[in-house]
Length: 185
Image 1 (tube, rainbow, N blue to C red):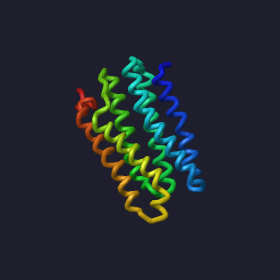
Image 2: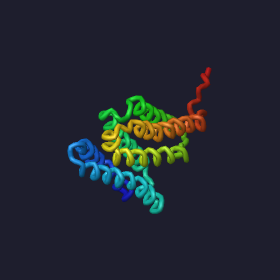
Image 3: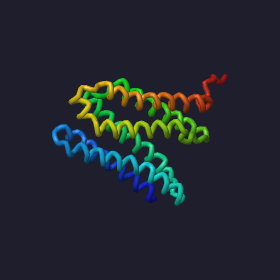
Image 4: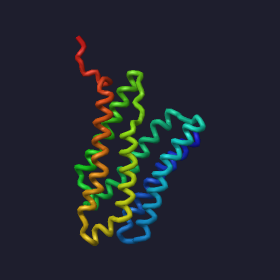
């Protein structure tokens, strides 16, 4: 197993630690900061494992599978907690999940046809904006609740959902031919 894949596995292992500390954070303020630290560290490992994989020629099929899965699990775990706390509407989480499943499905079809769909710029912007929004939200959720600043929750939702929709539409527009919707006779 490559060093890059080991780092990705560490990110996956950090997800339950993040969830536990974040779920317990309303009762213990210091756990919020620990959860935020875990989330930031896990987010940074996404950058690190990719750099190592490319620099040291450690790109592997396992890494190509695990890295995006780890990213999705990390951000969706935070979003699920925000949904549970009624800070994020379920429809927003559903948009994120739908985009992730749809793009993953598109990539699987492309691979079967011998084509690789690389991560696009809009997908990278989506990932970055989502991670930043979630970091801010984790840091400020209790303050938002205490001061009844629900509008901040909506800003965070928009920062996550709009790039998600845009990047999903872009992936399909650029790769629509992969679906081969013409019926063959």
